[in-house]
Length: 306
Image (cartoon, rainbow, N blue to C red):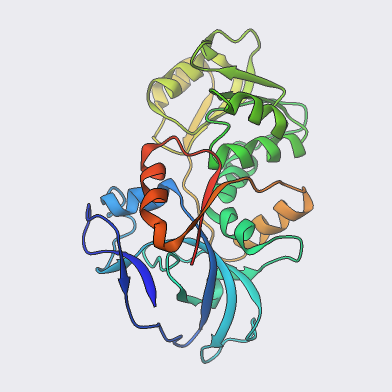
């Protein structure tokens, strides 16, 4: 079968022909129908996360994927052959950018009927970051105002919709055609960061979801009202600056263990969240998708089709 693998940190991914995996105890063998790219894949390949998610080489990339159960390992009772599922294994395991993947059954949930495999594959990392960062970490409440940076990106498209579903007023930053796009997703006000200064906003916000870091994060503190919360997914915020402003600031790290993946997928379905797919690319054309993801300018989600 074909799989996208790296042979070391910083190694350029390549499509290899490898043996089909066998499910061991507690695992299922999935025929992958769709796999989504994430900034996480770029960070894993580059070795930026090696202290948290060490990789064993050669390593098959891909943490978010969906497909059909083909075989069941010993002890698996939650799934049957032919079940449609979404998988999000520990990032150290990967395996999704391939025609088949052997995955712990505990890292899988059923694909709900309203969702296609393409949509299901896009949910775990991007949707989970948006949902749990806003609802758990930021404790976003009805009637509050939230500023979401990079609103047209993979996480941002989910975050805008989750925030609106929570009853919040949503401000977002975007550029180019992303401005109209984020409005379409439900943002009440969109700041085109190429021509406007978001830091000059004339309304205070209760929550900032920082998906960019750096100067954007630093300048966002000035927008928070007393008691406001900044949650960053990219870099630890300045704790001293937060204290001086009378706000809280935290770094968010996604954990989809246990029942959290099921909670996330249910939230997508129950809130009628639109899963936005920018493009679908054949696995054999992986390189084009990888370069776009590396650029940092990918809109919404890119999906690989084996």
